[in-house]
Amino acid sequence: MKLGILNAISPEASVVNWGGTPVDTYIRFFESVNAPFTYAGYQVAQGQFPTSPAECDAYIITGSPKGVYDTDDWIIVLSQFIRDSYRAGIKLVGICFGHQILAHALGGRAEKSKKGRNFGLKSFDIYQQKAWMNGKPDRCSLYFAHQDQVVELPPEAECLGGNTFCPIALYEIDHRVLGIQGHPEFSRGIMQDLLSVMEKRLESSMYEAAVRSLDNGAPDNPLVAQWLVNFLL
Image (tube, rainbow, N blue to C red; front, side, top):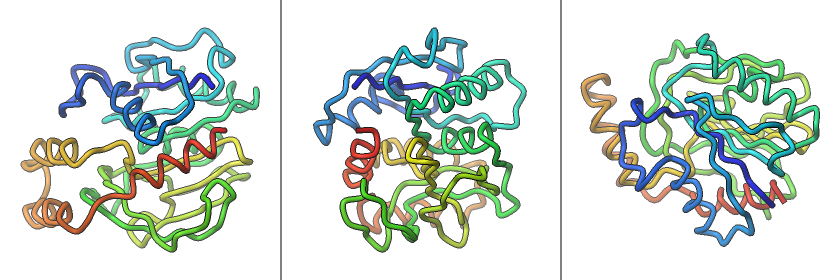
C-alpha cells in the first residue's frame, strides 16, 4: 500500500523539532509497528498536492496551526481533494487539523471551541467496538494540542470516542474515513517542544497542568498506530 502523507504545516509555521519534517515523523510512527507501506509526502500547505486521488492508495492528513474555516487557497483545494478522494473510495485518516477538515469537508462542522485550549496527555473513552481495534479498550490516552474541535459530524459518521472537553475525539465514516483529534505521532519530546512555545500563550495554571500531565504515563501511540494500519489495510 502506498500511503500519501498530506503535510498541512508550512516550514515557517513549524515550532518543534520533528527530527526532519512532519512527514518523517509520520513515517517513523508507522515504522514503529512495521507497517507494510511505502510513503509519499506532499507539502499541501505550500500548494503541493497529488495529481489525482489515485496517485496513492490512501492518505493521512496531518495537524496544522491553521483552522479549517481559514480561507487560504490550499485549505480550499484540500477540502475538494478530500471530497474527490471520498467519492473515489480511497481511505482517509486525519489527525487533529486533519480530523477537523475531514469532517468539515464531508458535511460536518469544526470551529474554535468556547472551552478554550486543550494541551497535554489526555484520556478519552472508547464508545464503540470496530474490527480494526483488535478488542476494545475502555479508554485511550494521547497527547492533545488544540482549541478547534469537531462540533458536528457528517451525516454518515459514527462517533467512536471522546471525553467531556472533546466529545468527538474519534470518529469513522463508512469504513473509509477515520478522524482522531489527539496526536498519536507525537513523541514526548515533540510535546515538550510545543509546550515550551505555548507557555506564553497559555494561562499559567493550564500550562503547568499540561506539563505535569506528561508524567502521568505514556500515550497509547503504539496501540493507535496498529489501529491505523488495521483500518487502512
